[in-house]
Image (tube, rainbow, N blue to C red):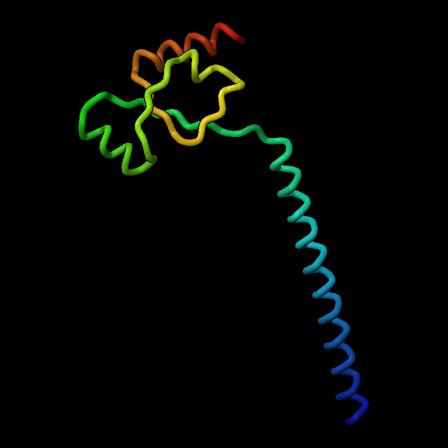
Length: 104
C-alpha cells in the first residue's frame, strides 16, 4: 500500500514539474512572439469619415480626444506619426481611395 501511495506521489510531482516546464516554455514563446510582432508590424493609424456637425465633433472628441481633420495626402504619407485617431471628410476619403489605386 505504501509503495502504491509513494508511486502516486512521485508521478504527481514529476507531472507537476513537466507541466511547470511546459508553462515556462509557453510563456517564453509568447514573450518572443510579442517582441517579434512589435518589431515587424508598422504602427497603425486610424482615420474615420466624419461630417463637420457639432454633435459629430463632440462625440468624436469624447471617444478619441481632440478632433483633427486630415487630408488624403496627409493620410498617405508613410512618415507621418499620429498620436490618435483622425477625421476625414467624405470627399477626402474618395481622394484617398483614388491615390491608393493610382499607387498600385
